[in-house]
Image (cartoon, rainbow, N blue to C red):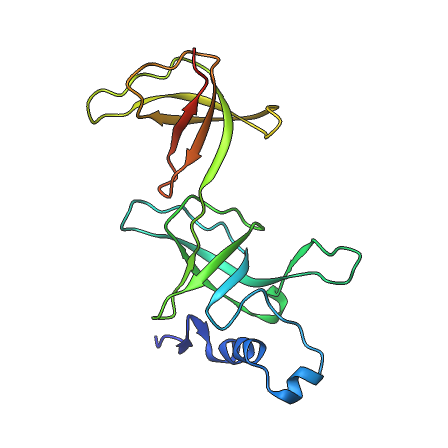
Amino acid sequence: MAETPRAYGFTKPTALILKGMAHPTPNELIAPFVQPGGNAVGAWLMEALTDITAAVDATTAGSGEAAVAKRDADGATAAELVSHANQEVSTTVYNLGPEILQGDFFQATRDLAGTIWVTPRATAKHGKTSGTITARSGATPGTGNVNLMSDDLATTGTAVTAKSVFGQTIASGTYCVVLQLGSGDWTIIAADCP
C-alpha cells in the first residue's frame, strides 16, 4: 500500500492551507480567513484528538493524532482554545515526554524532515509526602509516594511515585516540590527543611 505523500508532516492539501495562512498573499490579507496558532517557523498550538502516548524511553517516542488549534477571538470567549479538526488540519505527532490526554492543548514544533514533535515542558507541582522517602544510595535514587497539591496547597487526590537524589530521608507529611521529567518520572527538587 502506497504511503500518502506528505509535506512537512502534513498531507499536501493541508500543507498548502497552512502555507497560505503563514505566508498570505496581498489578496489573502484583504479576505478574512482563520489563522491557526502556528507560523512559518513551524511552531504550532495543537489539540490532542487521541491520547498521545508517553515516551517508552529516551529513544522510543510515544505518538497520537492532533489538530492545529487557534484561540477563539469572538470577544465572548477570548481565552477559549478551539481546534481545526473539522478542517482536516491534523496529523500524527510524536512525543518524548509524558502522556497528553485527548482534548488537551499543547505546543509542537516541526523538524526539518517534517515530523511534528510535542514541545517538552517541565511540570513542577507542589506536593506532600505520604510516607518516608528513602535516601539516595550512591547512584541509586531514593523513592516514595507524594500526594500532588494545587498551587494553594489543596489536595488534588493524585498520588505519584517520586525519586529523590537527596542523601537523607524525607519524612512523611513533608511539603515538597516535584518535577515531572521528560521521561514521565517524577523527582523531588525541593523539600521543607526539618
